[in-house]
Each structure stands twice: as structure tokens, then as C-alpha cells.
Amino acid sequence: MKTSLPPPKGFESWLDYAIATMDVRSVWLESLFDESTDTPPSGDQIRAAAQAELDALRAIAKQSSSSAGQPKGATP
Image (cartoon, rainbow, N blue to C red):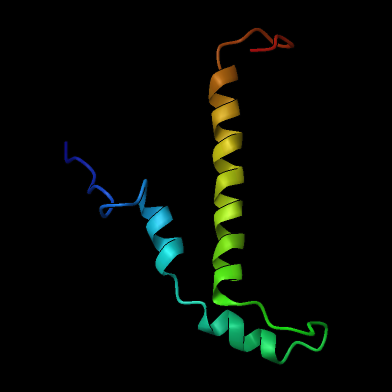
């Protein structure tokens, strides 16, 4: 079985790397023409939002894995 390719140095996972290096130009350009937005988000704000979503998914996964095997209704 092949082992997975480790993420680049300084990154916990490939998803962290993808967020840190993602191209946000298209999202930023789209926001320039969005009349409901007074100020377009910065690239850092876009990346922070993506990182927050990934962090939330990780928290859910961690909670789910820690409660696996627990009797229904039991608290870990």
C-alpha cells in the first residue's frame, strides 16, 4: 500500500496548505461588483474564513471520533 504524500513543511495537512496558498482573486473580483458589499474582503479575510470552516469541521470530526463507541446519550 502506498503511503500518502506528506504535506509541505510548516503545514499540518494539504488542506491547510491549500487554504494558505489559495488564489482568492476571483472571489475578490466578484465582490467588487457585489452591490450588497461596501468593502470587498481582503485576501487574508477570505483565507481566514476558509480556515475557520476547516477548523469547525475538524472540531466536529474530533467530537464525533471521541464519542464513537460511547453508549447513546452518554457524555464523553
